[in-house]
Length: 125
Image (cartoon, rainbow, N blue to C red; front, side, top):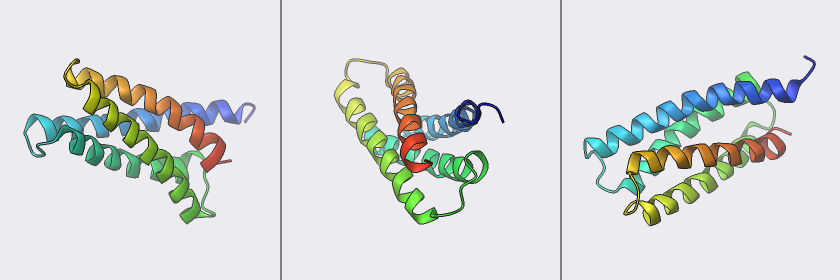
């Protein structure tokens, strides 16, 4: 492949979109049907489901890294936890001022960009 980093970005984006759809769907179901009362908790649960999906897909299919699996899981998980903490804090602070579902969508975009950069250069270097 001539531009492997570009290919990784494209595939990461595809898995990211799939993971985002999964995460957003879980968030919507948990909040809309009041399965979870606190939207912050719904955000954490949904993000963890998305994390499991994207970690699996990026590790085994995109970056094709099977070595140091536990270290990569910890690294990817740490990046994910930072993203979850940031988005949960922003939801807590901004939910009175914004549409909850648009806020979640915007935060997912911001967090995804930050996480790609961190994962590309730390987790999958």
